[in-house]
Length: 182
Image (cartoon, rainbow, N blue to C red; front, side):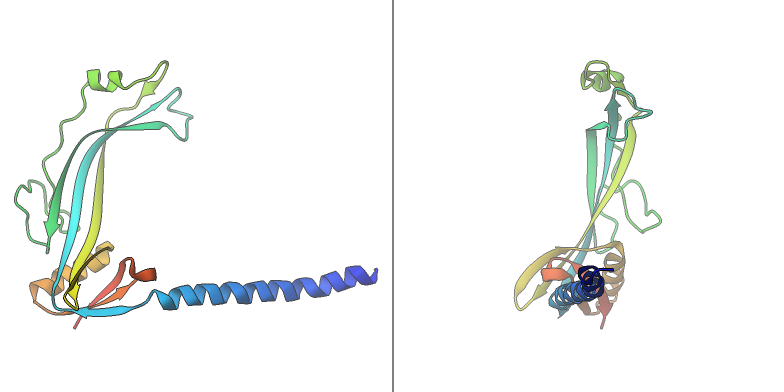
């Protein structure tokens, strides 16, 4: 074994260790800069639910992993504070969300009009989508941030009992990661 080979083998683990240390510092810095907490008495959890028809198009639907997707009619409804919204016709579901009326299913003619040469069209599928947000006031400033189902439910329950919430914000204060009643 040549000296150069031995030197390389000795320095490789050291380089890996340095790289690991640098990555750990980057992740730790990102985690610490994004974990601000805010306590508020004024907040409103919302869940925007939508139902949308979609059809997949492809030359071969059985083998194509990335078919072209066309969206058709859509309806939406805003759930606010966990209360049944006006216009709700379906629900509450397993997540205590209320849903709007179903949009009209695309007709065969509408599906065929969007078809390109030699493409096949799938059967229309109904997509259900939910976008959770939490709006709150702090220092006379209104803020609305995206969140997740768990935070939404915690805020709905706290809102019903009029309890303040302590919010844990995500990286760069761009989302609400956690909500705890106070």
